[in-house]
Length: 242
Image (cartoon, rainbow, N blue to C red; front, side, top):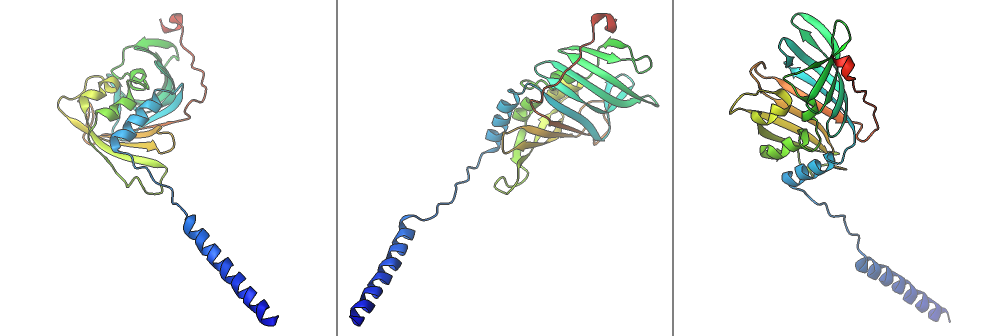
């Protein structure tokens, strides 16, 4: 009986060992496959996402230089809210000659209203810069990426990062919707940051002189956030604008 018991235990141990080995072979662990997108696919997906936005917050700053908003008025920083397709409210700071100013701006399509820095009264203006058109989510900034040439990833897209980093060149003529009259036959370098989660365009940098009033090496940085967070934009009345 002793030998039978020992023999039975040996068989049981072998059976369990073989069973475990067989299970490991039949059900191996499978690593999740990483789908790599091309630069064109990332840009296309970003463009599609940006057209779905109902609102977002933006900020444009200058690492080097400024943007001429009106003759003699150079804007250094502007930030505010956008309700696509054509409603924008922003505050900007800049220089009028040697004097620092701060003012409010409302853009409704191609109509622009500005508070007079001295009186605070709304006035309708015709700026050289069209922020409303530039931040149009279907025809403005997001579509600029599709017009770039020599587009490439700045970093390996398979790395553990939450964003795609893309770089390319853009003809200055395409910045006319933002800057008004631009230099002919010139390019600026563009660097864009796009979310890997939903393809939101969160940052875009324009490097280089784009219009005659720019200084050499001008760098404009535009950031976007608070996507689809409801905002209230007050539109100046016609009486206020007169």
